[in-house]
Amino acid sequence: MKKRTFIVAVVLFFVSIAAYAGVKEIKKADKNFDFKSVDAIAVAPVTSENVDFGKVDSDRMPKIKALLEKMKKNMRDSMIEGSKGAKTTIPFSADVPKKAKHPLLLKYNIDQFDNGNAVARLVPFAGKAKVTITVKFIDPKNKKTELAIVSASAKAKGGIVGGGLDSEVLWTAVNMANVDIYRYLKKITGLDYSFVSGVVHGVKPGIKREADVMKEEKQEAGIMKKKVK
Image (cartoon, rainbow, N blue to C red; front, side, top):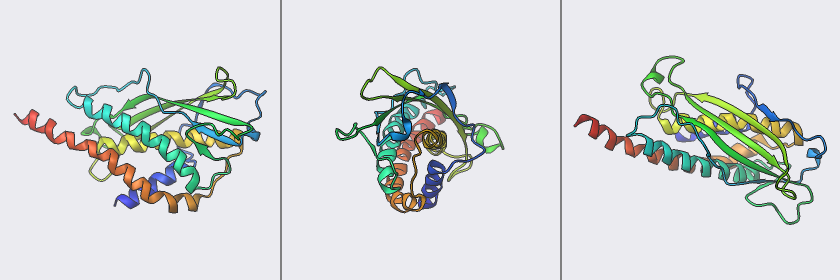
């Protein structure tokens, strides 16, 4: 089950799905910057400044915040490690390579991290998790220069249990939103990759990250005990 779930996540991550909302260009790509010449992409640590959690039960907030912190790290790690496995034509890294002649820096911020409603998710079209991500494209040689700013959103439900655990639906929504960021990145830079290689090399680390995120669900047991009392 876990392996199948992750393969679906990889497909969502690398393949553009027409049903997605697409990116919203907050600032259009700077025409004076040659995006097609980018030879390295650095991904800064993901932030969550002024994040909107939606309506979360106060008892569940610690779990949601813990999920957010894990997903911020796991998303960044997935992008960097996934680049190697998928053999992207432009390598991804945590830091800007010194030898890069025309690097690009991506700064991700999770603006919305709404887990929706687990009970409502049992009803069709209701209770979905909602995630919104904003990404700033920076010229690392002049960090004050924002070359482009885009935003992408996604909603998700379903998983191993009816409606889906918070960890499942939020992680899926994060990846779905990032699909559109990748689609935009591919459009402006010409980024390409091997889908098959990405799936083959991504299963093992992907299962590990999924399990890491789902560990936070153990907090639900304590929450339910409190409510029963």
